[in-house]
Length: 396
Length: 173
Ligand SMILES: [Zn+2]
Image 1 (cartoon, rainbow over the protein chains, first blue to last red):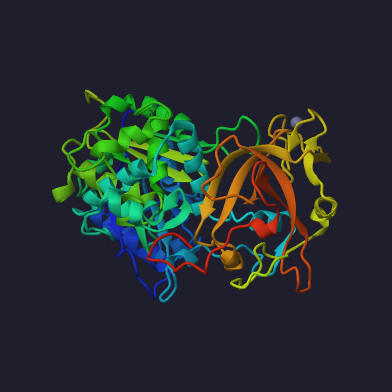
Image 2 (image 1 turned 90 degrees about the vertical axis):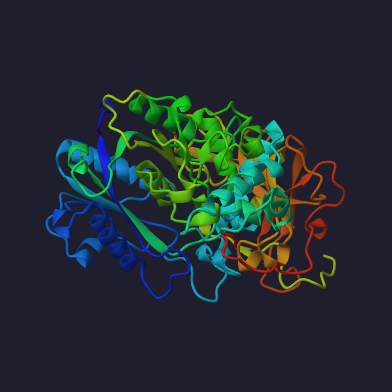
């Protein structure tokens, strides 16, 4: 694999996002696939590959093909690498296309965790052992109180703060910058300006994390259509070329010497994808980084090599990631202010930016776009390098 | 146990044993922390470990450890992740490195929320789970306290006035 013309994203489909009630994840997924095909100027008859991933509810699967009444498929699978699923799906689609087993692959994510009259946090349901029913070592772990991502990411962020002096006000810079970008995104949930002071005044959830360090919860679905670069060039939308991809995983190591929380699999995955793409971090114009929490952005920037380990807090300070800053990052508001579609949030915004369709939020340069996906508790990672240009002949 | 007049439930949710955890909870009831150990390399591992991360062996036995260690990280939890933890907030969840090497997730008790620091010395304490005054009694749970911290056990665990207000469309529970 040379990295040249791996494949291209030819279509993007997004349903209504947010408090979309009364529809199943499967119904939304089907709509997103239809929208993505129409966006590309293709029809269901063109589709010969379908990759499907679910979110918090994990209630969408290969039955989607029947719901869509597709024709014969050469590729059909449910993919779950948590927040890394979107990047994993696009890479798998590119591999299938390169191998000739499929020519037009839709990759879709759908989730419906929000319910009317129920707090967003209830989206993460209780473990099997409910009130009064905590059993065994799992029960002891439940009693530790560290039972959801808020608390486990707080442990990671605190570790970084203790080791490197990172401060909550620096995490706030991530939230503030993304909110400023969100102002230009009609699809974003939170668009009113945000200040560091407002972040600091938001209620603590699991210190050091405050409410405005945490992502939103969203109902909806997003799909992309992946096809060969040559074919994409003849379709309706400007092609978004895939220059490189990577995937890296490291289950949490719970013993002396573990770097969990300080270093993530992005440290292996980012360089791998950038090597495949033939670029370095200095070539990156836009970052679309998975942001389940503000801290995830900080640690991912470090692991990708935008700054040295431990300097992420200082790196994001001073509005570097905001509109007008040195590094356009999470230009749609991300999952903190935009919408929570797991890895499809950064990927969908990357497609918009690569096409130059960002409107008032369009980044000044878009030649190289770096996209991340993160899952588990900083345990799963996927990276994509995208560009409006073909890799061959590009002077990146 | 002291009166907890603002409580709406136990500070440590009721935990029951199963067959696999019987030895762990029997040890805790005796005031001992039982963890696992790799029979190949001798590495001491967390109680829930199935495979030795150093050598890949699944041949693990059990060993009582000192219960002393250091604080790797901690989180001050204000918004309970589960209904059964609502009576406990605010509480501290800690990541502890035992002197023998393994990392444990456990509650940190007996400390001011502003007090912990990475690397601080901690030691195991044992607390009852469930409502001590109301049967059925839960298993005894290992928790940790800063070595310098005054007070021990569940009585010293901090507690809030009540449940925090809920959700604003955020991924918090
Ligand atoms: Zn071993």
